[in-house]
Image 1: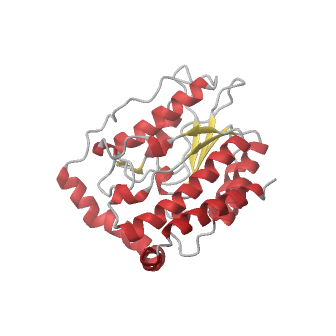
Image 2: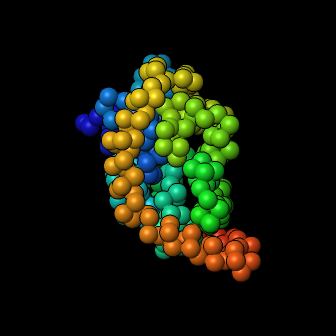
Image 3: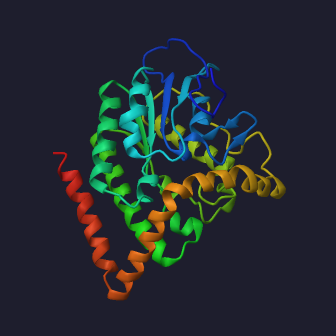
Length: 294
């Protein structure tokens, strides 16, 4: 058994009455891995927080976190979904797509097909699905317009697809993009891209409320504030200088070239007055991708 938040992690095991969600698997990228919510054992994250509140009567759910930093939608179908199905989950969280938007070869049709296949496999095996739309990274990171606009365009397309596939597969959906990340800075970690521990708790509480509204018997909701004190400024700076720098370096090797090319292309489009046409083209591509599903 691995430690909480650092990989596959089972909180507890055991059979449960019908209707209870005792086998929970989380799939996705660094957001669901728990980056931004550091504990002694590694990352914890919103999914682990939610897992402790799924089952009533003081019992705990069996929880496995398959999410990992940098994951793309293709990583769901090639690795995470097969591993999840082997665990026979009753509840499966699938929150992914942000990393797809950061790649030079972003293809909304491929993202749509991979995500649809993943959700279909999990729901086809009886899992209740959790999905979420993602916030625009531009305002969070205060990116310059030549980079912020194309990323926003891509994120809108991904969220359009996620909303449509949520309805298609009858998932429980959290409008995560609409949470007050910019208005309440404490909800963001020091990197301004991932939730803080309090932000992860907010996501867990919102999912808990949605599952309760859907009629699933759950335990008490997660607390609004983590039991652990928020990290000090010194701790945040130390994290950025050590673990945070390593995270950025790992992501820069696969993201930076594509992002620079994206910014250059957007700057050229702005000069030609073509940014609006690019917005329309991306929206059409998302609609066509969804239409191709039938």
